[in-house]
Length: 339
Ligand code: FAD
Ligand code: NAP
Image 1 (cartoon, rainbow, N blue to C red):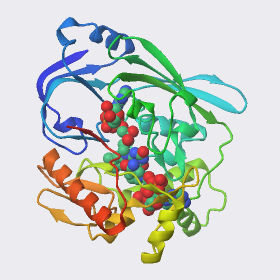
Image 2: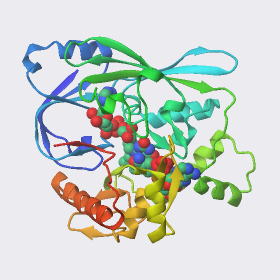
Image 3: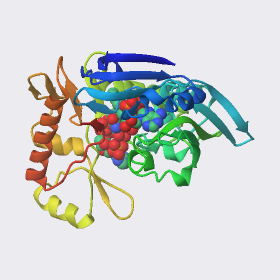
């Protein structure tokens, strides 16, 4: 294990916010984690967990221990004619797992191609894109409780997965460290191209029955054209979740905004496209000092240089207020803010 003291976290978060941590420990195995949690000299410090830092906003120096999970390893552990179960260490880069699966034609995560971050963080918000979520192919995960150092396993139905949500983002946030995940993938993939951006690319390319390799390639093209590369412009992907509203609320909104973009959601609810709401309020492409709203995707807030976490927070508060004032809809943050 590597332990650093008084270290800048700038390179550990894709927003590129420059705050310091009192300690940062890099963990490369489950045993190392158990041993670290037993060390008396760190037991009284607050602890936070990070993977790739692509879904966090840091707002101030942290007088505690940042636990950076680097646990590697990726193996097929079980298979039959129809399914394969793959285990990956929490520190494995998520897209390396996706790339492996797509190469082998194991279906279930191809639409989640090119999502930044680690496998350990992926169940946290039940990562999703283009109509697929990790919960659809999630089997189980293992981890350690921070307070007692106990090993626990969670199967799919114990994770309380929801829309960009899970038990790990709620009751167990900063209490449980995921050390590995298992996915159950299909050997005969069912390709999902329900999103119109994928459909139109397939039409352009005249592909009628796409393979998961073709889907991955198309998603690469769409993502490159719409999303800022965190290596060039600091960002953490979508800052807000798409709001879920009732059908009655939608009917009210449609009377005033006939063009409002919406999709059916779970349990008779409606999902509004938050990016559309923000764009209608005039934010898309706006730059204020060091921060701004991405010109191609209004859900993405960006750091143009030396922004502080507070500058991002102030911008997000203004956006929330204008969406609330104009549409009566509350935006909730998708990213994890460390105040
Ligand atoms: P971090 O940002 O390091 O951590 C996120 C949260 O998980 C924190 O609360 C942290 O404490 C916790 N955490 C991290 N590791 C562990 C662990 N091992 N055990 C317990 N808790 C842990 N997300 C999507 O869902 N869909 C997308 O399409 C998508 N596209 C993106 C595009 C861009 C350009 C960017 C920058 C982000 C995007 N994201 C997307 C958000 C982000 O990539 C995912 O949420 C990703 O899973 C975060 O992984 P990470 O390792 O960077 O997590
Ligand atoms: P998009 O395709 O322009 O769609 C805009 C919004 O409408 C999305 O948020 C999406 O909801 C919703 N949507 C579109 N078609 C839908 C359908 N057929 N059924 C249900 N909902 C539909 O979005 P985009 O910005 O280019 O992103 C494409 C995908 O990548 C989305 O799934 C998005 O979530 C994901 N993504 C996520 C992040 C992140 O940080 N979380 C960043 C970039 C992209 P959903 O978001 O619920 O899918």
